[in-house]
Length: 429
Ligand code: 4AD
Ligand code: MG
Image (cartoon, rainbow, N blue to C red; front, side, top):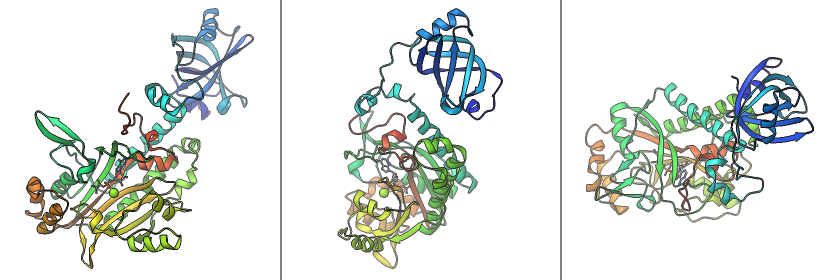
């Protein structure tokens, strides 16, 4: 048994092979059937001639519809006319399962494709993205493990949130109110005092009602936290993990990258350092471009687009106004109206790839911050123990994996970065 990618690399040319897969496309001319077969790695053409296979096999090849499951025996030949440049000349062709008429034909609406997402995941577009996603997840694990970080896991069911009540999903928990995690934030700050350098990739949930091309209600969050570290230390890791992921995807999946409309060279050029500016500098730069925003306001898509315009690497904005930011972020000792927080912003409208900060170490300052955000410090008492028993400087960040994949694959909409997207409008199939 061989895979299609091996055939297309020329590893089986001139040899007999067995291939298992599904019919992607089929057409018959005279005494020949041309069946394009797909597997997890790609598509290849199989030529079946009436004289070359048993009569029953030829009849089956002519009858089988798209997405029928097949087992092909034959010899691999190089043929410029075939898609991918190779063809299997069949000497046997078995149909393991005759598919019903496949509901996905050409020119279907985006809504319909979301209704039949369980079938659309078989498309070349989706499988290409899945392979890139696979490589990206592996690269993030590889980066943090190589840098000496421990993988530790927070709970997904939590009493309270860390990123603001408006995006918190509520859950009925045996008659009590619980919430789905928005971030491992509070747990990371407990675990970092145990393990010092930690990371994990897991699902985060945001009840974002806004319908945008870059928000999901369930996304995969790569998060890290580091003790004895400040904002600059973790910015280096944000650059490092993004760059490493781009290098790995470019090295391991050049054809998939090209199929998505990026080039491997573009990704290989994503190397540190990324351009850096403070929030104040960003506002000045925007003003020069005719984009004015009031000091203290968050950067929106429009501003992020203007800042990243014409830039092939992500950029970093630091030192945000404290009023826009969560209670756990450290105040800037030189400018108490700012926090030592940063975002990594990608171009092509993807926007914030990473959000992170140095963390506030002062117990009273955190309590004050919680109150300002309408929270009761008592509900966070267990978390505040991290500032009572051996508090040390620490910092960390979170990276949206689908945002990164959206940027790498140049996807118009984030929903294609994940097999079964969850958005305000739908949670099925
Ligand atoms: O900026 P956020 O909200 O930061 C945190 O949650 C921190 N506690 C992380 C940390 O320091 N450990 O989210 C981090 C990242 C964003 O930069 C973005 O890439 C992604 O998570 N993200 C989303 N991705 C998809 N859909 C959404 N609704 C997202 N919300 C945030
Ligand atoms: Mg953020």
